[in-house]
Length: 233
Image (cartoon, rainbow, N blue to C red):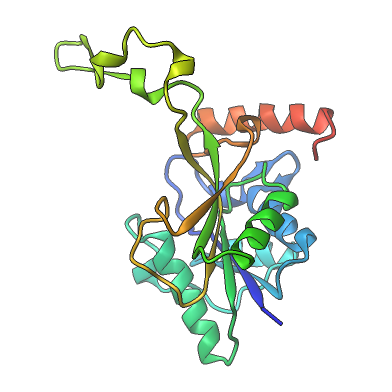
C-alpha cells in the first residue's frame, strides 16, 4: 500500500510580516489552516512541520501536526529552497526507518487551500508516469501584452508585436499558485517543476493569493471572508 507524507515548511524570522506563519488569521494561526486541511484530506500517514522555531513547533503540534526535529540553522536562512527543506525531512525520517512513496509539500501560508485539490493532485500523480503535480492558476491578463517601465519612467512592451492582438487570440498562461507540490519520493529527472514531468492542478483564481506583504495579508483576509460567506469552506 503506497504511503504518503505531508511536509509543511515554516521557518521563523519572517521580516515583512513578523511571525507570519503563526499570526492570527480569522481566529487561528495561519499555519493551522494548512495543517488541518492536510489532516482532513486523509491522504497522509503523517503531517510534519519543518521549522527552526520552538513557538511554531508548539503551535503546530497543538493543531495536529508532528514536529520530530527542529530544522538546522543552515537550512533556515533566507536563501534555503523548499526542495532542500523537504529533502532534509524525508532523509531524517528515512534514518528512523520511515519510508514514503509520495510526498506533498504544503506551504504554511495557504489558508485558501481545499482538500479536493490535494486529492486531485495525489490521484493524478498516482495514476500517471509524471513525477510531480502542483497547484497553479491562470494569469488574469495576457502576459504577451505586458510591459516594463524603463529608467526614464517610460513604458516598453516585452512583445510589441502583440499590441494590436485581441486578448482571446493570445495563448493562455499559468502561474504557480504556491499552495502544494506533490512528488514521487526518490524520483528526480532534473526538470524544473514547471516542466514536462509535472501535471498542473488548476485552481480558480479566487482561491489563490500569495501572502508576502501586509497588503497581501489584507487581501487574503477579504477573500477568505467572502469564501466563507459563500460556504466554499
